[in-house]
Image (cartoon, rainbow, N blue to C red; front, side, top):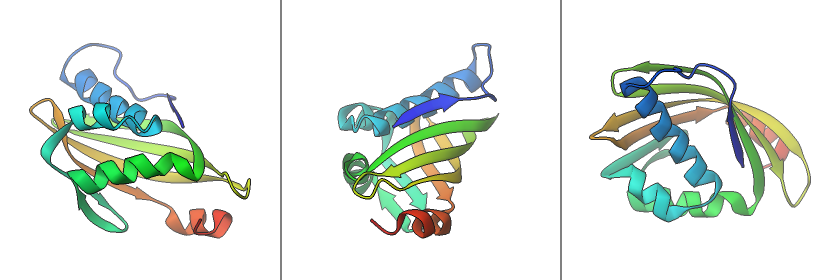
Length: 138
């Protein structure tokens, strides 16, 4: 996976830039399946909310560990907004299903809440129907 930001990041320093940097670190840790880096970014009571329900820290680390196995993916951040302790990221995930070679661009929206300089909650919603239609459920 590769993350690239196309626009929407504040150029100056300050709380907004720090919060965006934390979110970018999360995406890099997931891309690299770097579970140690991931754990250092998350609060102990971290929650991940998605189309499939809510998972706590241990289950989220398991998901991150498994993600790169069957797909190559590249995230492009299209827009970002920051309001206090929440970062909104609108993105496109270009996925390639490794076994079949099929590719698809899946749009999504992620909201990340920061608490005490760490990531406390992530709400991640993407166009799962498009992903399933073009890649299958593998």
